[in-house]
Image (tube, rainbow, N blue to C red):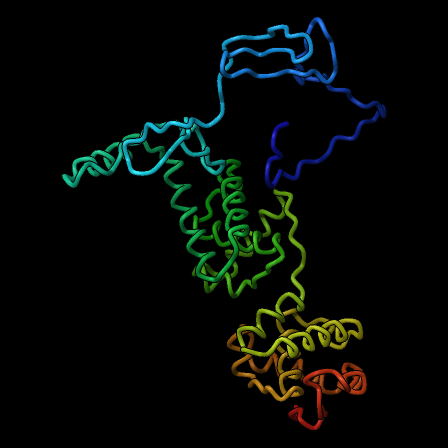
Length: 340
């Protein structure tokens, strides 16, 4: 069965007016013994003799079969054991059959093999692949610099290759395409990053990333959920060195504020920043608006404006009586909160 194409195009589905289902022919190849005709067949591969034999009646169904298992002898000249008959697995992110011969760079110290390897690489390299490899290196380096997982990096590479194969963003710079691919990959793998963070990472203007993002959203099928404040709370609290119980209380405050509609219309970043500001003073781990603004990427005025609304509804948002008896909640009072 063929692997599904990552990020398929958004093509309009053709409706079947007659209501008839199209039945496709079964193209599966099934090996069966002509004498026994047992299904499922009991076929044995005898690699020693190179025969394909029926295990029930002993009829030879095929000869000269190829042993695809690993070789237990090594023919490598270098140090180490390499029992594999073939090279490394094909890279799905590159085009071509990838069966080229590569000249070794080690020759005992003369340096001639290194020069031959470089010249051979330039002669056999395909321009498109060279650009893809360079883009993959940039994506890996950027994802590693902000501690994104390999899953996000591979998703961004798949998306970039899809964009290049379909020529979806003609006229856009490579940096802008890479930034949009990383942004969509983060959203798809539920590790959302803000536009401001991607801008600081890739040095690409926010408007350019937004244009590429909207264009890809309209042309490709992507699973990019809207980023919410709960996803940002844990990361922002960790960067501010707040203890885990403060992070949990902050997430509960965000959910309560969302249910009551206290900060309706505010961006998820502003909501998360204001909740961190309130909860840090309540649990006596105060963080200034300057520190939170630096981590969250919003202005201090925005944090204070959202905090003013939270402070007005503080008794509805936080039930201090229900927190009594829980660890690290002794002596909590609203008097510790700063006036807006």
